[in-house]
Image 1: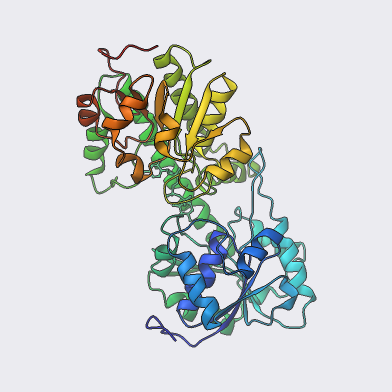
Image 2: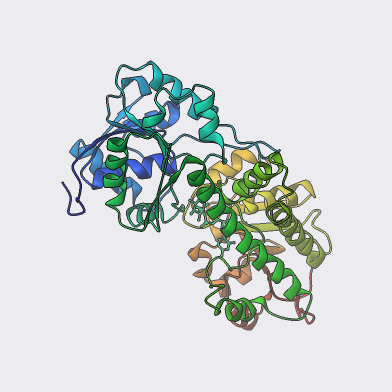
Length: 445
Ligand code: UDX
């Protein structure tokens, strides 16, 4: 038992070893629980059986190594092999172009569980659009409604373990006919992490998760729209949003402008919440517009690069960063990958570097030239574009980098670098949220 321990040890099966599943598994193991981690994807299974985390996430490799060594986590290849008291369903629920979530992986796990002789408490942690749990119950996917719960996970990639250990809130969704003993077990297990506890209906739990992600996306969309307006108004958006956010009713978080946001949750949640409302006869003006705005911001940034260069065809462009944000190798809905794809489509020669995500991006974009270092990516380039806010790009020796570039031009999609320093070094430096400089000083080839 660890020093965190405040509950009786329980046995869990965690189905799906993605970010949510694997982080839940090692996070629960640290609380003294025993976990059977079930993964059916052959590549992930091989990695896990070799003790390896199949993605990049701070601290998870060390936590998994410790949990496997102590026997707290064991790896299984099928749900039917579990004998756990509590099953956490953490499988993917991707959406299609129309914003409909595919919950077939959840249904498949429920079908396996329904065949088993054991009678575990079932907890869905996968994100599902509002109304999904009720549909699963109605359509007979769940054997025992009383032992069916949803406990949404609010972790962010890059800080997933810390977020899991210290949740901002614990939300438990349950049916009106829930088994009170099962509910008490979940309150004990998840309540032990601290944070305000909310016992709500199944649809309320779904809507809390959908709503929290969509609201974060709205805030960033607003910041990015303000960045565009600042660019065209001769203002810098930095001090503007800083002062706007000083109002505690607004707050300063999630107001960091970029050329668009990505990841597996925020873009998806805007679409699912808009679709959920539209299916119920609501127009969902705000969330639907924010989704379109996010696409438009990304296009506008690409077009700005094109305008500054006077066309991208035949230009050599160094793209720094491919992950959807720093601290992860995830490229799902990555604005950086979309930008690299746009530049390639428009005839540019794109050399890109990312400390974690380059392999995934290269598989998506076969014409991308993957560089081994940031300096290699921008050597000989007509422009360096900062697309992901990895700290190592800030730490680059930009004075030396300048000598390797064909043109000392940096366009910063993340507002990562200091404009004064860059201009003193002799760069033409442009960034999201600041007007394009008039006196460029640096001739473009
Ligand atoms: C998000 C939520 O934060 C988390 O609570 C939920 O459980 C899953 O979705 P994640 O997708 O890991 O987590 O990333 P997050 O850190 O929220 O960033 C999402 C995107 O927004 C990234 O592309 C990031 O670069 C961008 N972003 C974030 C901004 O552009 N500006 C900001 O101020 C914050």
